[in-house]
Structures are given as C-alpha cells and as structure tokens.
Image 1 (cartoon, one colour):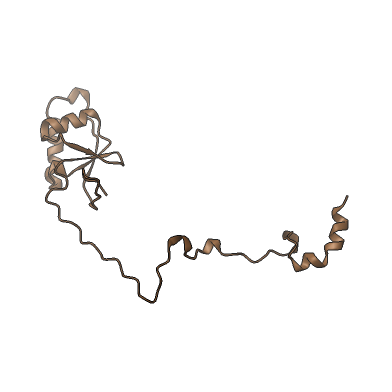
Image 2 (cartoon, helix red, strand yellow):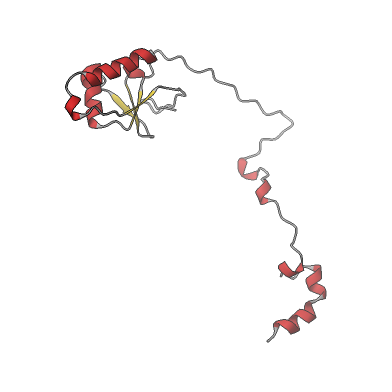
Length: 149
C-alpha cells in the first residue's frame, strides 16, 4: 500500500526494482541504460510507475539522469516511488462492508469472545492446590500433617 504525498494509501501491485550493479570495467558504456530500457520495454511499464527497493545514491542519480525521475516519494517500507506513480491509475473497486443487522448489537473488539480467554476446568488434585477443590477439602487434615516438617 504505497502512500501518496498527502498520506493516503493506495492498493497497487507495482513492478519492483532492486538496485543493480554494472562492474566498474563496464561502466560508462551505456550498458546500465540499455539493460534498464530493455527491462522497461519487456515489462511494458513507464519508469515512473516502478517501485525501487532501497535505492543507492548512484541508482537515484542514474534514474534522474536517464529517465528524469527526480521527485521521489519515500515509503515507510524503504521503497521509493516517483512523482507520476499514481497518475492514470484507476482506483480499485471498493468492496462495501456488510451492514450489521438491526437485531445484532455491534460489539467492541475488546468485549468479543476469545477462545484463549475461556476459563479452563480445575486440574485434578495433585496439580490443584486451591482451597476450593472438593478433593483437597476432604484431605485437608491429612495434608496439613504431611506438609509440616
């Protein structure tokens, strides 16, 4: 869910790009630009529609120089998107939430029933040391004598 500049979230499935490296002996020959353009062509996507994962300063400079991507919008998940990412996108169809039936009261989450909070039955006597245990109650005089050293 990328965020727009105004903070609103949009549900999309963008093409994500990882930072890439061209060996120093092969840099400044246009191979990075050729590789990137080929990817854009095969994926049929415009450069501003990409989400870039943890871009380095070199990758950002590369995208700025060759594709004019300078207005970046950092995301909370360390991705970066660019101005134009949300343009010409159709909004996803919103599913309406089902309305509660009038006979059913709306319960806050904190009051809803949870399985893990249900009370367990008391364990049998050797494991139950509570005074309310019927087994413990009948054996109390015996246990008091044995518990005393």
